[in-house]
Length: 98
Image 1 (cartoon, rainbow, N blue to C red):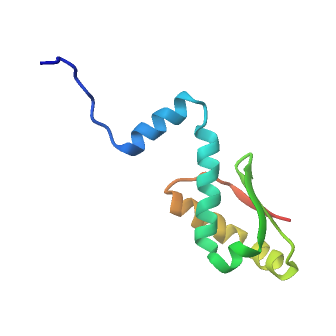
Image 2: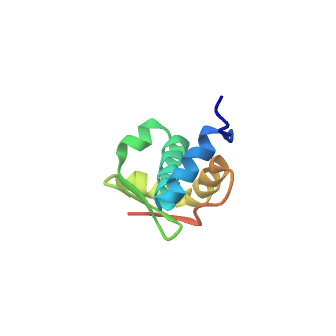
């Protein structure tokens, strides 16, 4: 019989260790922020957004729709809170809309 001992860990922990070893944790976290933002605003608004990425703890959103820019700008504090709440901790400090 083999005397190998295996540690049991969740799949989430295993993926996190793999990302840490590869230096990809920040990229993964940024992708999670963008995914949560799209989840919070819904499919209709997500289709109108041309670009979304994180830069220095700020979510940057680009859209060609003037009324959507205005609406997102007016609600950016609320959206920031909803995204951080969905992620269960603070990952972004603000949202910029262009």
